Image (cartoon, rainbow, N blue to C red):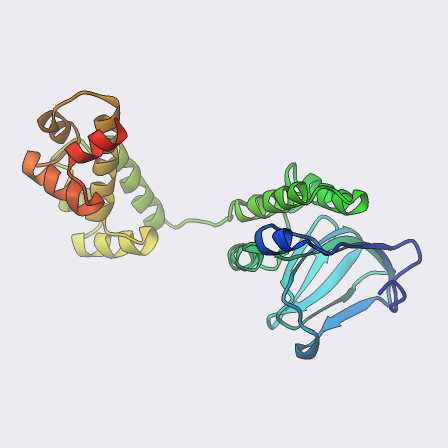
Length: 282
């Protein structure tokens, strides 16, 4: 509430009740706030007060300390906090004053989406104040002020979650991961070459065959053979739908041993013969 400890008088909060269609099918923001707080501000949600809702919070000035899932982190100006309010959490002012905007998210696949983002990027996202995320957050708060059309609200929330989920995870790759990525690029460029086999790829990566197989599976979540097969089948699908080449020509052009192997591999992957696939998309 706006009379809670530490919330200053220039703070505002908006409430919106969803209609049945919105509640069942759309992203929705039932509670939206723009808070200006002093050093005494704190908020805590316990097991007894948890809600079936998620929350996004963008710090504009000062800093908030956030305790969530057994971790203590600080969100300063330009950082965004994501929380699943079905779990206990606590946040409080970590500076003499703090200004932040926030909203609750319900509906559609909001909880799954928010938890996917938290799993990928953590619950405090440092790169939130960029060309896409900050303006989108601003738009959602503006939607609440203006009581905007529910479909536009849903669109803007979906855009924000999409931007957050699409953030690049910065990581330093070791030599083995770089070698596997090079192997992937080689397969993408040379899938038509029948001589592209596992021993050859392992040799290019300067690894033993067994170690190469293990590291490739670790980094790509599939085997080199499965990956190469998927590249060849993808190329075959493109040729089946965009050219009038025969099955023999496509099998040759996509690196399959022979036409029989091509047909067998294609049917195993799609449940259709290459000819059936071509007729379906013709």
